[in-house]
Amino acid sequence: MKKTVLTGIRPTGNLHIGHYFGASRSWVEVQDHYDCYFEIADVQALTDNFDNPEKVKKNVYELTIDLLSIGIDPNKATIFLQSAIPEIAELTVYYSNLVTMARLYRNPTVKTEIAQKKRLFGNEGESVTYGFVGYPVSQAADITAFGGEIIPVGEDQLPLIEQCREIVRKFNSIYGEVLIEPQALLGKYPRIKGLDGNDKMGKSLGNAIYLCDSPAIIHDKVMSAITDPNKIRKDDPANPDICMVYYYHKLFSGDEVDTVCAECKNGTRGCVACKKQLIDNICKYLEPIREKREYYLNHMDEVQKILEEGSKKAREKAQMTLKNVKKAMKIDFFNE
Image 1 (cartoon, rainbow, N blue to C red):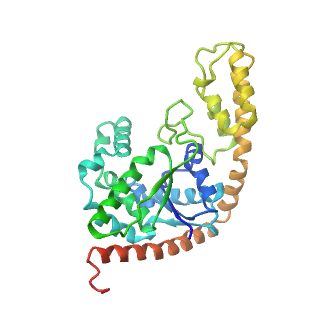
Image 2: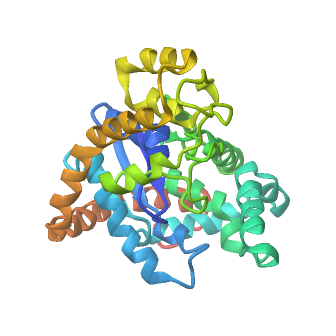
Image 3: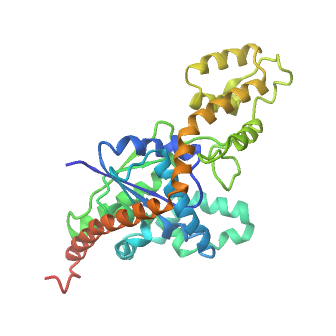
C-alpha cells in the first residue's frame, strides 16, 4: 500500500515562489508515488482573519486554483476543505489535553509569528487568540485524521511537525498504538529569501513574487530587487553572493547561471541587463502555470466540484480515525 502524504495550506493569499520551491513543487512530484491529501486549512486561516471571513473564502478558491495550476491532479490526489471535516475539530479538543500552554508558547514557529505580529501591529500584536496559539494542536489533528505519514514542509514548519510527533507519542503512550507518527519531508530549497534579502519571503513583508503575477508585475518587482551595494557603475566588479538577482537566477536560469556569476564578478555584466534576463526567465518558467490558472478561473464549476468530491473522500477517512481514537479513549459508548 502507498504511504499517506498530508499537506495543509492556510488560504491567506496566493502561492509565491517561496512556497513553490520550498514545498509545493515537491507536492507535484510525490502525488505519483503516494496517497496524497492536500488540505485547504480555512479554519486555521480564521485564527488571524476571524474578522474577515470573506477574505478567507476568496482565498480558498484562489489557493485551490494555484494548486491545480502547479500540477496537483485531483485524479491522483485529494484536495479538500478543513471546514468540511468536523472530525478534525473533535480531535483537536482531545489532543489539547496532551499539551501545556507553556509548550505551545515555546514552539519556535509560534514564537516567530507572534514576534512578527508585534513588529507589524505594535501592542495589538500581543492580543493573540487561543486559536492562534493552539494552531500546532489543530495541525496535529489535521495530520493524524488522515493517517499522514509523510508531511512535505518548508524549514520553518519543522517545529510544528515535531510538536505533532510529541502529541502522537503522548496519545499512544496513554491509549495504545492508535496514531501514526509522521515524518517531515523537506523540499530541495528549504527556505526562499525575499526580494529584499529577508530570510523569508511573505505577503506581509511585501517581498514576494507570486505564481499568478503578470509579466508586468514581475518586471517591476525584479527591477526593485536588492543587488550588491558596492557596484556603482556598470563595469564595476560585484559579489553575486550578496545579490538577490543572482540568487533568483540560480532558481530560474538553469545553464546560464555560471555565465551570470562569472560576468558579475569580472564587471562585464550590468545590473539592468542582468535583471531583464532574470525577468524573461521567470516569465517563461511561470507561463504554463498562468495558462492553467486562466483555464480554472473560467471553469469555476470544476473547481467547486473538485473541492466537494475531495472533501467527501477525506471525511470518510477522518471518520474512521475518530472512531478508533474514541474507542481507545473509552468514549465510544454507543458503538460497543
